Image (cartoon, rainbow over all chains, first blue to last red; front, side):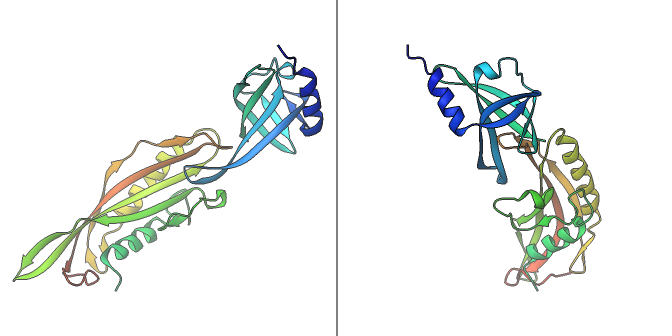
Length: 92
Length: 149
């Protein structure tokens, strides 16, 4: 099986940004794409993280990114190797 | 004069504006998309299937008008209680609509939908429609803008 860990290090170094998750600094990739939820202007904020960086993070953890606070609403594995996880965020 | 449905809608908007937690955010046409700055909001819609009545041989329509008031909210935490509060305030406000175009009417709640919540965005969005029946207005069949006694 191919070890993607070195590649992930390069990707996160290139596209990641510093955020704080549950009080700890983490380098993560933010996604805040536009959606219309029940026709209401919204974004769908999420953080893509290396699983090893957020092993202890649970639903309900706080996230701070660029001066905005969020709460983790769901944690989704990123297929296929689950070296990464996606945190679904709710803006506070 | 505007169409009878327009007159009813205008009376409903007037009664609801400032009378609920939605404040002055009372719309008759749904903005797409809703902006956060427009929320909480109410969307007021009026519809009817008029019944024909013949008085002295001249066709007359009786308009029993359904007024649908949809509340839209976005935020964190409990959105159901605010929807309940809006429903209560809307019901009180529309009960105060006793005339349209100078004609006496009665407006009563007929249905309170279960809330719909969507959590796919950065904050949950909730909607609920409360329906009312406004009785009764009459117009000539050929002039839906002219209210009859």
